[in-house]
Amino acid sequence: MEKVTAQIEVEAPVRRVYDQWAKLEQLPSFMSMVEEVTRTGEDVTHWVVRVAGVRREFDARVTEMVPNERISWASIAEEMHAGTVRFVPIDAERTRVAVEFGWAPKSFVEKAGAVLHLDQGAVESDLKRFKENIEGGRNDRETVEGQDPDFLL
Image (cartoon, rainbow, N blue to C red; front, side, top):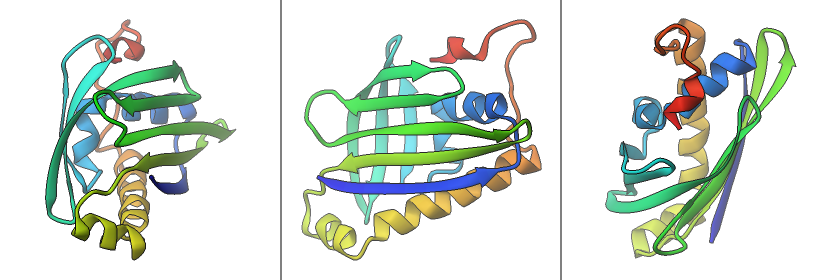
């Protein structure tokens, strides 16, 4: 299984950063390899991703959620994707986002991309796009006032 790790510092409070990431259906807005995430159950989502031009679909279960700290997941049917996103407050207005996941490349093109660390570069670019979005306010919280954003998970 290929391992990818990346982190970035975001100029936003941990609660806002966590809340934005927890909206799993919005991940395609900043994750280049994720085409679609659809909630199919309380803690289950269906993912459509494209890696090196290869389209894959899988279901994943949120295995752990600790508000303002981390979100972990794993694919259900076969071991092909699992990871954790950690949210570490630096101070009241800055948060470190650390992504760590593993995935199983299958096709020749996916394996070649993994050897060239294209997945690493893509995740680093995705984190930069997330930072720009949240710092620019384009993806601010869209929860109904009075509701806990954790209900989204």
